[in-house]
Image 1 (cartoon, rainbow, N blue to C red):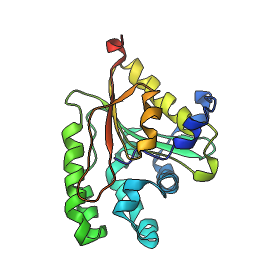
Image 2: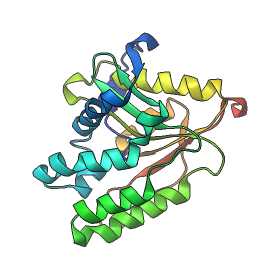
Image 3: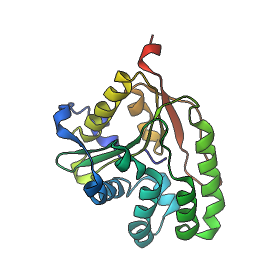
Length: 214
């Protein structure tokens, strides 16, 4: 969910940095990774639909990030650029968002009148997840003032090289329609549409394992 916040550097066609610019985030990096993601999603359509009030977004969205994608830290699959401009929280095969914790966070932090649609969106998200082992990208974000420098591209290439080395597919949900063609450049394909009530559209996207490429 909410795999957004890298549009500008893709549109600018920025050069790809060397993978040495990316490091694996450890437990002490959780706060930095959460803040980077929050900065990157500050104008994300779906994130701000869920938390439209600025104060609520700033104070409550970090709880959602930790519940939904925090498992990447303990799994050793959370990545930061060395200048802390961007963060990508990937979940490896067999690791999923903490469903109970996510539900608890939604119940505690999302406006009651919006919860039904949020839960429906989450249920639809679950229906699109591949059945086979795969890498899942819940969240990737770039600090807005650092966009346009290839940060998101660097993070994507770093992680997808691992997917290809392991010959595993990858999956994400794009929460910004402008990003569809951009993720397609990395081999992802739209496989459906997620929407409920007044929610912005979200697009589940799948990338085949390398051995299946034509």
